[in-house]
Image (cartoon, rainbow, N blue to C red; front, side, top):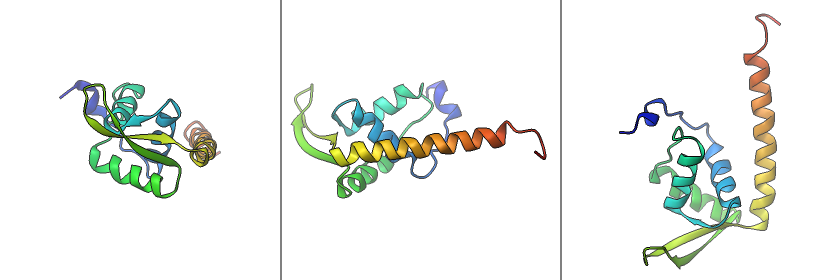
Length: 116
């Protein structure tokens, strides 16, 4: 096991959707590519397992925030590739705004003097 996984952080409910949408903002990817992008982008701190990823992808697809199509991978295998839709781009902007409000609120509490 890699050392970075020892200090893994459990994702808050709803943050996986934001991470997937952001990852797809960088371009279409298949499921394993999304997992790799999240892991690499987080400095190996966040690890998404397939048992969490694929239900989230299906949920985002039902909401029409992403769309999927079958493509052929680099190693000549048939894979489902996901990409952001116009509605998904709007949702990503909204999710990022909510995330920024949440992190600012958390920082306000964590950095405030006791009893302020």
